[in-house]
Length: 349
Image 1 (cartoon, helix red, strand yellow):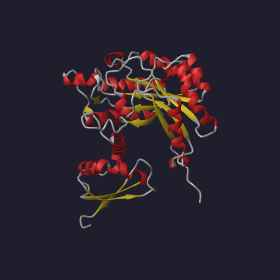
Image 2 (tube, one colour):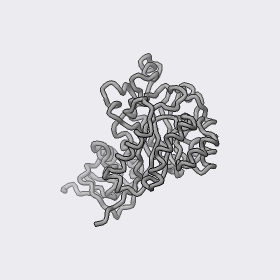
Image 3 (tube, helix red, strand yellow):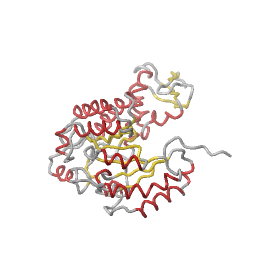
Image 4 (spheres, helix red, strand yellow):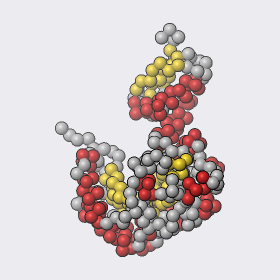
């Protein structure tokens, strides 16, 4: 019996929380977010992590596999430290167990020497912690870099053949919906390969938590964060920039009582955004309010969850818009992707 290979890449993360970061940003508490301590990651830890991944059932089902260094500023570690970490994973690439490496770093941490080291060890993707393209927002967040640094870094990375990802954070101090959409438009102009959207969340122990306690900062509401990310995601993907994650990754440490102080945290935030996007796409195919008392909906099977929404909130929204009771939602793969067919049902049904 043949084994079906997964089309989704298997990414094995190696977390290096806060390592290589020249200072601490106002919102940052990476130990809580990643559930990892500040202890310096050594080669034996990396080998243990990768061996465990290689021996997992999911590994054999994945046709594309990648090692990712997350949580710190990889290129700011210094050449010797970068080389140490990359040498630890090199045997796994040489044996064909993994196809590539990705790293996460700062926009002001890129130069020719670092790029040469990464290229020689098989790094193919570099994700930049851009957060915003507004210099005042970056200053208030204590990022220590400017929008111009982002422009320069994306340019040099693309010229040297790296795939480029950008990590963006709506809702920071000094930000607004208008400013963030300007950030999105500037990012579109840079044409990175991919993006992540992480609405700012207030985490216990951060400087941002102190600002919140002293009423110096007001976080986004969940509703506003979903709307901003929906619009941002639509704009990015309409221009060929894949959004690979929406919403902060959870961890056992982050989910402990009292760790999330305020902000638009939701365990299914990405799904909320994707469902909201889908609701907008199918709206033209729904009947006008009052046209039918009962309706049935047929849609591609893989889009049924998006139509239903989180805890059936999508169905409730459709009923509110149409004034119709939804009698059934059925999979129908003859319906084009991104659309629905609506059956008007007699009152006697």
